[in-house]
Image (cartoon, rainbow, N blue to C red):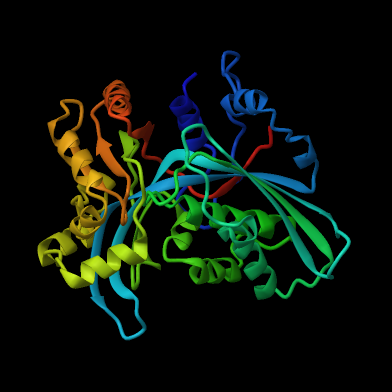
Length: 358
């Protein structure tokens, strides 16, 4: 079974695009030929997940996303920009395992023991583990709910989503950490403090609590409504290097490119993901910072297996829509031959969610 086949199985696990979906079913249930790719990867990397077992542990998926539509507006007095965003989750995902342990010697209160393991081909994270957004999410939620207990939250993150790619990997990990911490602390899944905390962490984090396909406005963090998601194939392509979101916005402010009112209305009025116009008015700004993005776009426009392509978020990943998964696989292989990171996956009705431990 390929990685993306496993992605498809987990698509059905994570529930619908609602804040409180039903409990997911077991992955690959009833399929005697199913191969647990996570187990195989852990065996190859000698990752010991035994400590994350038992009733006081939880396993979660944290899906990637792309922006089908991103319309950045004027800069507000508070320094943020107005933004209309239509985000769609992908079945490609990180995996988090979390468990409550007794307090460690040292200062009273909450301690966080965070380990992060990167999939092959991903650049190392340029952030101290204690400053990781996962740690921030757990601490902020503890403050929001007034949890004052001497304990340790152990977290293991298996990273597959590249950083600085516009795919929301860090934001999705944060959302999954909130879901996991809430579960371990006995909070209701629809406790409003979870989403309030998500908004404090970044504009994309609230999306992953809903998942699927949804419209957000404000500064890109205010949920407007859901859109019927699609399940078609897509290939992600990322050149070497990343794009700082703040740098992209500064470049945009120097040469703003507004989206047309007609495209904005079409995005707001779409009821199906496939009807959303693919637009992103940050493309020019990001390509000025990372010219290799223009090379990826030019390749996608010429690739016979690609129907449409667009940069996600502020980059540096481009997502390319394909007619079949075989076409997506061929496109991904061609992209890798050019030295780019590439991954074939699918759109999906997924969100940051607990899944059965394995």
